[in-house]
Amino acid sequence: MFPFHGQERALNREELMAQESVRESVRESVQESIHDYVVESVVHAPEIPAASLAPNEVVPLLIGSTVGEVERELVLQTLARCDGNRTRASRVLGVSVRTLRNKIRLYSADGIDVPPHLD
Image (cartoon, rainbow, N blue to C red; front, side):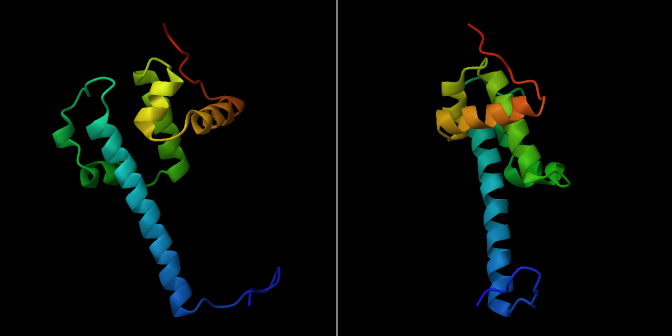
């Protein structure tokens, strides 16, 4: 049974293991997203050879950043590489155009510059 607001209880072993499993899934998802972006991006050739940017080499550089910060930077840099083309960027990122547009709206509302679409 779930505790009511303000009531706390110690987590049992299964709950702790489930939390760790969720953390590991998020970590793996971020690593896979970064790897897919770096290795499989067909929009422009990366400036650094993709073979030298394995996930286990990139992720340590991201420690200290939140998943939201990493995601935002990945979205913005992908948009810049796609010359602001939302459809191409959404394909590279593996998200729907609608999801990408929603993220762009949030970033703009926070005062973050979003790369415009260039013809």
